[in-house]
Amino acid sequence: RPIGIFDSGVGGLTVVKQVMKVMPHENIVYFGDTARLPYGSKSKEAVTKFSKQNVRFLLTKEVKAIIVACNTASSNSLEELHSAFDVPIFGVVDAGVGEALRSTHNKKIGVIGTAATVRSGAYEKMICKKDGEMQVFSRACPLFVPLAEEGWTDNQVARLAAEKYLEDLLAKGIDSLVLGCTHYPLLKKCIGGIVGDEVKLVDPAKATAKQVKLFLQEKGIVNLEEKAGERTFYLSDYTDMFYSICQKALKQGYDPEI
Ligand code: DGN
Image (cartoon, rainbow, N blue to C red):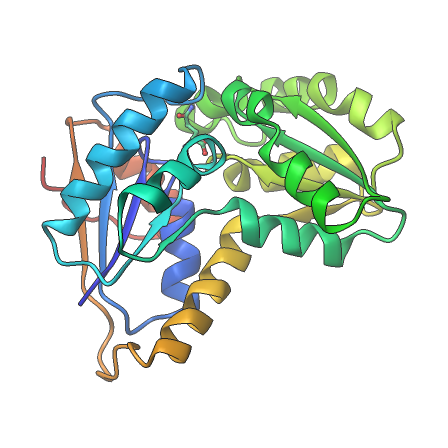
């Protein structure tokens, strides 16, 4: 049975990339809610309603576990999803928090994400719950999403935006920065250039993929076939963006089903 992954649109392909890397033999069914994106500027209620519908769709594909690739949905709706469904559901926040705690030495962590992710305070709450001495500084960087979709991932405009968005966080002396939005790993080079080598970039997708692999192993539900896993992509609306982000994130194009 496949692993289901959903996102508000195409950004979740950065999570697919990590899952493919860590679990190359697993079959993946991806759902991108391109008809209703962005989630990042919507209310908790709307994001939760859409997320439940996305889970129901993936369940029709008989998935054995679901990854909520979207940080906005993970930080606003995961609890509701856990109470509404029996299937194992993983968000990206939990693993991202673990990675941030391992990464920081000075206990000052920056978190960037969509407005809805930052408003939820999910990263902050979970980090401080695990270690009360941590200081977390958050900043919404909404322009990074269209920049990534435009392919402007490391030009002057992207660098200017990154400089402006990150200056306050840098002034706080953070030594780790959580890329709390699916699109931000696409801007990693640009963001890394602005924050410098002293600040470690944390990609929650990597840690999530490892966490899900461990879970499948513990439950004994790993796909034991030797061949590369099958990947199927569903979108709720046609979008050109799918191809370009697919090329960028997965280094290969796939035909989505609409
Ligand atoms: N996928 C969203 C997230 O990770 O928060 C970003 C895209 C959006 O809906 N704005």
